[in-house]
Structure formats: structure tokens, C-alpha cells
Image 1 (cartoon, rainbow, N blue to C red):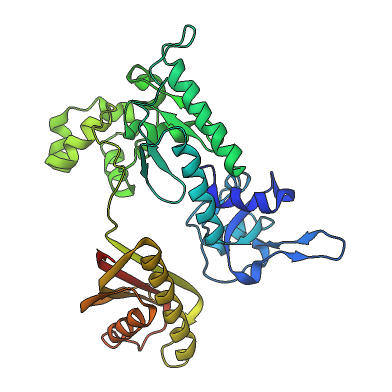
Image 2 (cartoon, one colour):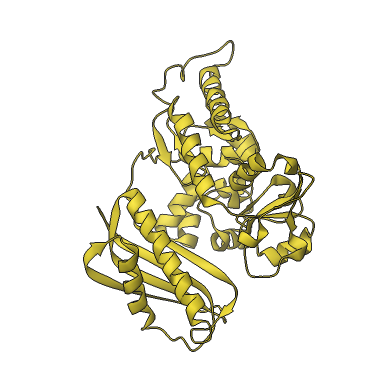
Amino acid sequence: MDAFYASVELLRYPELKGQPVVIGGGRRHQPEALADGTRRFATLRDYAGRGVITTATYAARDLGVHSGMGLMKAGKLAPDAILLPVDFDEYRRLSRAFKAAVAEIAPVIEDRGIDEIYIDLTEVPGAQDAVGHDPHGGVRALAQEIRTNVTRRTGLTCSVGVTPNKLLSKIASELDKPDGLTLLTMDDLPRRIWPLPVRKVNGIGPKAGDRLQAMGIRTVGELAARPRVELVQAFGRSMGAWLHEVARGRDDRPVVTHSEPVSMSRETTFERNLHAVRDRQALGELLTGLCASVASDLQRKGYRARTIGIKLRYDDFRTVTRDTTLAEPVCEAADLRRAAGECLKRVDLARSLRLLGVRASSLTRA
């Protein structure tokens, strides 16, 4: 989906279309309805706190702001950008709607989160048909039908990459955003994939990217030109072999239509540092709220958890975790809160805190 959270908000506030908009504020950043029927919106210029950007419109991205950036830092780059609060209930509702729209046409789907899926089109009728002089016209028409149906059902746009495998489809879906449709075959690798920076390959992170750059490898094509043995020597057998394969566009992972979650968690970064003694009530309320959110997630998805943990980040950015394993799995907020409270007794609370999180793992079906 294209800038998903931001696009959902533009459905609600169409007057902001084309403007730089950032999602990541709190309840106090709700737009204010004015007497003349218009709305007054908060801007990044007036923001103070430690929040981060959840997503931003493409107009905001053009100003240098992006997901994960601190809102105050973003305010220096784009002070007039509109700031809106997050509304996860609405994002989840439209996430379900867009996936249902895809499933009406192509039901073999791997869910990759709230705004992204993989689809196997191999057995969908018409996918293998030639249309006119285009041997891939059938799958192109099918992908266009999916995009049209998503827009019809949600009012939102999506970008689709159609390729022989998941690796290339992930890259292709980003090439012509927003509202793009990109179809690639293996013959297109030299022209469309090899000129890209190596970081465009999903799985090559900052550290691997820096190591590759130190080796003089900046593009996917330069990576593809290196011998397998050299990459294995530099990165080890597994990672080196994987780099050799992905640079050539090879990926044999199937579309997985179902997988069990490993854990469920919620966390929050505070607007200001909180201290366990001076801000005991506020911290207690936040912990209770996080436990309630995790419990709701467990119950909605039909799971119980035996291991409950907490995550704390101190004012010096040091992070600690503690967890406890219960005799029986639980999914009620009170049980999670009790277990999280026990975990808190095992951490140093002398320093101020900037983040608190709750995690439920060792999951079983309810």
C-alpha cells in the first residue's frame, strides 16, 4: 500500500491531499473543527517531545522526512508539515479491507503486516495468457484488476511488483511508487535491478551495506560481478552464498499462506523522561494500558501466552528486558499486568526512563 497510514488519513481529511503530512502525533494533535466548517491542523513547528514518525506522505518525504525519524528533527526539515495522530483501529480496518479485495481475485496470499502482502498468481485463471503481442499480458491485466479492486473497496492506491519470485517482487513494488505496476522478468535484471544500490535488496541492512561499500560494491550489479568465493570469505558461508544468489535475482522461497506468531508486544516512548518514584502513578497507568493492549491482541487472534516480559529504556539509552514464565498460559489483562509487575521488581529503577514495553511469548492457541 502507498504511504498507508498517511493515505488513510487523507481519506478522512481530503483537503490535505498534495500537502506534506506526517503521522505520529498523539491525541492532543487531533485537528480542531472551526466555526466556518474548516479545520485547524497541528504542524511539526509546534511539536515538542520524543515521538517518531510512523509514516509520511510523499510530499513530506520530498522534504527529507521519513518513517522512524524523530518528530522534532523532522520539524527542523519541514516545520510547516501537518502533524496528525495515529489511529490504528482505522488502519487495521482498511488493512483487512484491502486484503479481502485482493483475495476476491487471487486467494493465495502471504500476509506480511498491516500494509504489505505477497500473492502467488501462478494458478489464477488468465495469468499465463498472452494478450496481443505481450506474452505477459495476462498477468499484467490481472495485476491491474487487483489494483483497481483495492481502490474500489478502500479508496486507496497500492503499488504492485510482478516477478518470478518474492525477492524481486519486493524490489519491483518500490520502483514505480506511488500507484505503480512493475512487471519484471529475469531478462530485465541488468536494466532495472543491477543499477540499484545494494541496500534496495531486502535483507541487506546498514552494517552489510557498509561492509560491501568498503569492498567497493555499491550496486546490485557490482555485487553480482563478484565471485561467490570472495563473498563467502568476507561474510561467511551462509551470508556470502545468499548475497551471491540474490544479486542474480534468485529466490526459491514459497508464498506461505499461514504462520504462527512468535510473540505479541506493545511499547511506548514517553514525551518526557519518567521516574519510577516521582511518576509512579503515570508509569503504572502506562504499564496497565500496554498490558490491556497486548491482552486485546492475544484475545482477538485467539492466543494465550506463558512468558510475559517487560522492556525498559533508560535516559542514557541503555535498554534492559526481564521476563517470567507462568505455570499456565494467560490472555487476560490482569494476569499480564501482575506478571509484568513481578518483572519490574527485578530491574534498577533508580534512573529515569524514556520507554516502556510489554511482550507476550511462548504462545499457544486458546
